[in-house]
Length: 402
Image (tube, rainbow, N blue to C red; front, top):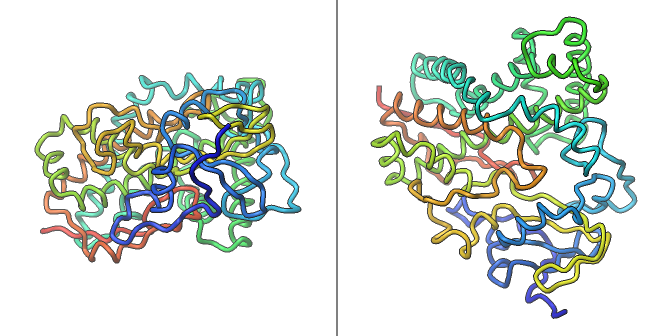
């Protein structure tokens, strides 16, 4: 097979100055050379970087590529030489293949249907209104991240898991500590361990006294307490951090695109399309990995068994062969079949809940504060580091006319 046109030796992380919403410039440049590149991992292992939409999508539906954690012996940014990698803990099915994956996912599918999530709309509306009321009462300026973007998905995922009201503040702080990508390794592990202990206690409480929540429903299955704890941790990670960053970064993107913002304010019927376009345009969950279980031909290249590949979701969602004028935010874009929620058997289980939250929260915010604008210059908005699993803003100072 012919050699690919490009070799990437370090995963690009630097975004272009003034372009906080575009993928790192080096990734865009890699894609210009073709949808697949050789990649040299920090430990020296030779792998592959896939940047094209069609190729990423095909890998996500190909059972010859594994999601198993114990096969992820390499990290895109960290040298893991000498580190023992074990299989995923019980319940954390994102890092498993069939049949283990199906054992954990199947009992959850009926809990996250589009219909069931739509039934939560009224509750999302109330939670959103409560936080907008608080913002309005305190007056401008406000940091939209703690005032709006974090609490809405945090409350909803806590209610789905049945976290008692009095525990939610401390619980949310613990979760943010190990998801921010900015804490020390020691603090991260302390927060992660504390969260695991809390979830173990929560599972035991639900088994003893079930309430009206997903975790209680699952205690009526053959899943063990350890498995339920793993599922709860995965749902927490997937249902909180991604949506929180979409709400904050999505608002930032709209404020930086006044024509699109004005169109959305003028026509609420564009909300669904705007949410899908923001998901494509921002792709806050940036990259995932797979490992070839056997030799696989991909785009004319032979991916050897045991070789790791990086799937770049953000360049796939900016692929000009799939999306015309891909670097433009266009809330009227007709084709919203993006990969922001993944694809195939690992497609995000909570995507319908995330959609409900965004479809409610964005128009509610823009309607309540028609003069909403940044309170600082755009280049002073602090962004999360690219080392964080989920991209976003650390804070988003906004103001409005009283």
